[in-house]
Length: 443
Image (cartoon, rainbow, N blue to C red; front, side):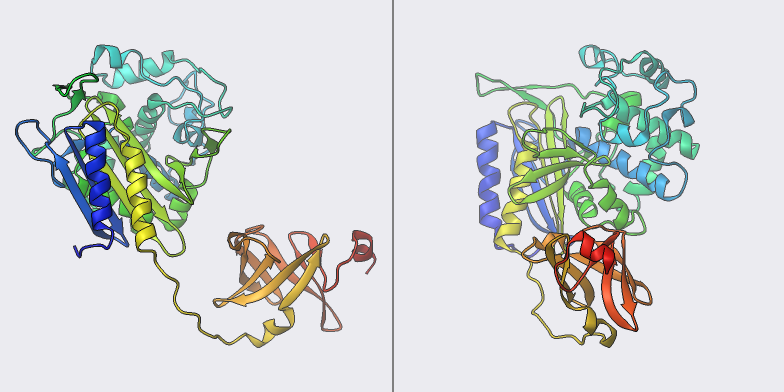
């Protein structure tokens, strides 16, 4: 790993966080384009004993949900299931039969948060407990009305994965994700060297150990243990997936918001199993995690230039913002060493497109049809670059909007005596001069 230009800044952020949180230890790493560009560890994984390090296991908690979500999407891509399947396709005769897999993934099902009182008793639920508890569970909100976090929903998604593959969630996790991605230090049960989880005393510089809670049949919601070295592989995957494991198009679908958590500020939303955090000028995707004695964060960022991620693991169960630090580290790395677009270079314009380039008008607004970076594009004059439509050829005088405004819609050329009269895009006419709707209709 070559030393990144932001190493000192990130080292400082890490050390300051461990001190402010009074956490026994904090471990973190940043990945860019599949390469770990920075990592750090502060403190003790075992107080009075093992030092923190990038190959020491910590509890991931709900970051496990992102693995479960990818398994569901893999099965969707294979045609085994559909995200809009009602639950009774997989769990017949359930009283929650109409809830869809998509809503379970996005915490929009309205199901109660937990399986009974397991966090008060610490009893390990088996599969019968899960199915019986699910049938007894309340629909605390009407489905799809708002976000309501549910560990129970992800336990049921794990059951669906098992039934859809005639195996178990844990077998599919190992076969489909951990083994192909080389995540040998990510396990269901702790394998040393491993951290001890602690409760940091709120009014004293002391800690108390927390129990190793086994989630049993609710494991798909939060059971996994991992290391910074292993988890940063997962962050890299969420930024730029191996196409043999998950299609990029599927990742893009998982990143699309399904439900907004905070309608007042729009800072946090849920997609297809991923949390979508707006942090400054970027939206990170990934998940946080919490288990007794452990807090964690794993987030990625992807745009036209960047494929990056950051992970944070700590062995305190209170007063530590592992998710926030992961986002801060990721943004600091991206800001300090931004990827640059290649230098501009001239390219030949296809002869058949020359007559289409330039200004066009529709609904009283001006649009520019341009040849940019080897593609036919359209953008409103003065519009934000992210709204630029990029077209793919679909036939003679016809294109499909592949990205941007009205994606999926067709653009076609209308000719009179071989001359271009207008463009038709998404049902609207585009003309060389501004016209009223009446003038367009009569021309």
